[in-house]
Amino acid sequence: MIVWGLTRVSGCRHDDRSFNSSRKLLGRNIVSQYGLQIAKYLIPLITLPYLARVLGGSGYGVRSYVLSVMTIVTTILDFGFMTSATKSISRVRENVDEASRIVGAVTEAKLLLTIVVGIVLVPVTTAIPLLNGNRTYVAIAFTACAINSFVPDFVFMGYERMSIMTVRYVVCKSVGTLLTFIFIRSPSDLLLVPTIDVISSILAVVWTYFGMKSRFGVGIKLPSFSRGMAEFKKSSEVFVANFSTTLFNSFTTLVIGVIFNATEVAYWSLASTVVSSIQSLYSPLFNSLYVYMISQFDFAHYKRIMMRGLLVAVVVSAAVAVFSRPIMLVLGGEGYLDGAGVVTVTSPVIALSFCTVGLGWPLLGAFGFEREVMRSSLIAGIFTVVAVLLAALLDARSLMVFAVIRCISEAIISAARGLMAAKHADEIFAGAARARAM
Image (cartoon, rainbow, N blue to C red):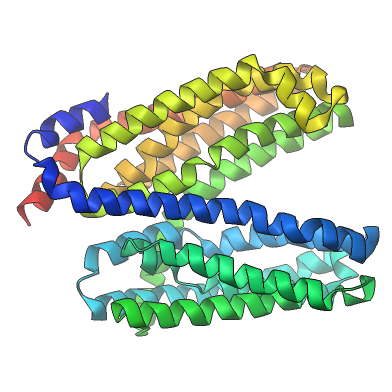
């Protein structure tokens, strides 16, 4: 209801024609973000079967395991800067010097973060036999992640020019794909896999910084160390909000792995994959809408997107529930049909999470209530941990119990963000009024 109320207050004062240009830009950004999302799915699929064949089971196993570790490393190195720094850039994009200082502050913070993560990775690598036996591979893979973390995509998001990100990703990854087919011929070429990633990352960094300078005049101006730490602190709330949700969901999977057999764990994992794959389609929409709301405060358009998007999410959620058996048959085969019930019970998360994300950064985050977004994530996360542990202690032997917990957790975070938005409605109205007056 907070969305509808905000629209009534602000929409009556806006002339929609004044937003036409910005809305068209929003549309182009959404298309670009979906193009990027599709590319991130399709390009790896080109090399996956090739690498699996030429590297052999052992080599490809090393590559896959290290890649999973580096996915966590990448999440940590981003540390919420994509959201917090995007907002900072959007607010000062007419001031090139200040935008350059923000880039410098983020660079300082990321340098420190990279050093810390690199140090922590050393004992982790030593403790895990598979990593310890492939330390050179881990080192090169981490180098690729570290370099890639310095790509300042938040600048292009802040300036609402996201098509550049898509073009750059496709070109850089295409170069990496070409090099893969040319140079990787056998298991002895295993170390070339992360080396090619390093080359692609360097190309991405150089391309992005040159593009940033030529298009917007923004460079890197290193501010005081305290400014870098301030940027680090600002992004920490975003990191906690985003990473905690992933962490708590992983905790549920971990507990399920302890109390259920491998077959039931497979049911849960496949059901989670169905939900998370659909949820990933929300990111391009809300990444673009977040930046748009920071600069335009166009609640009428926000409402329109939320209503239409929620309707689609509800329909998809219902369809997944109804067709859970065919979905499991296609994804896993007949051996997974007994897990169709888990898909059905978790399907409401698809619609609930649309509200969760839409009320988060595009609304609360855009108006400076990052802490409320973080708190809502922690509230739902604490519920998840307590409920999952309680179910385990009570010896719950049904995956349906955990599916219900997952749905309740998503409902809690969605409701919490709605209540927090209602609580700060007056401040949101005031912020929108100030923006219109500027």
